[in-house]
Length: 116
Image 1 (tube, helix red, strand yellow):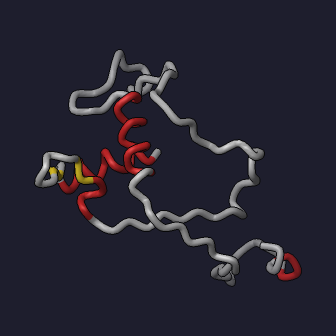
Image 2: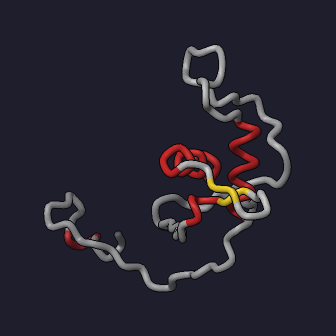
């Protein structure tokens, strides 16, 4: 997914190249990624990613299409972009307190709001 995000940033902002010819990720913008651990239960102790080159059979092609659309990236290229992007992050912040917006029109019963 990170490779697809990087591809969309490049599609929107254009590809950036550094003074030494290196790829510049995320359009040379600061990036904050976040997740919500209450949205999905952990799958186990294994990370949700693997290191190394893509070896799957997915081709990043639209359903019913013969191949990747013109200008699109192969899954191999998207995975490479995603790993490169992931490796650029230097800081990780773990938030210890959950903050949620309570929607008064929510269908969650009042007695279960604290669990939500």
